[in-house]
Image (cartoon, rainbow, N blue to C red; front, top):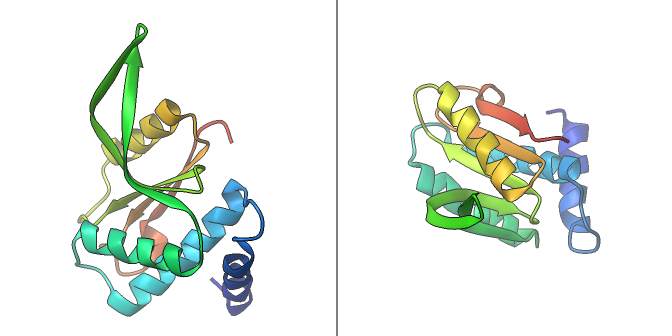
Length: 145
């Protein structure tokens, strides 16, 4: 991310309390947060640590989110609350799925896409903090965006 892009994302943080952001604007803000966290702490921490810090950053900038949000499955008009949980849902629009693994597996991508479909959300960010360069650990998953 260039210095200009970082400044733009920071400005978006400051404006986020005053207007509703779309998925792409939220994504830019989140990318800036991920880069900042990874540059300061690096890889190797538990997913729960990264989650806590992301939420702290979102709080600092007045961005609304839900943490460990339950996701129900509806099958043939039967609602099943069976324990699926999204790590973070930002502004009721973007799902963040946090990983700290050696390598993302195809099932991680499918899991996030399923969460998007079940919640009728359009954008998810799959983030693996256990990489040397955070840009290599971020995958954008879309559901009819």
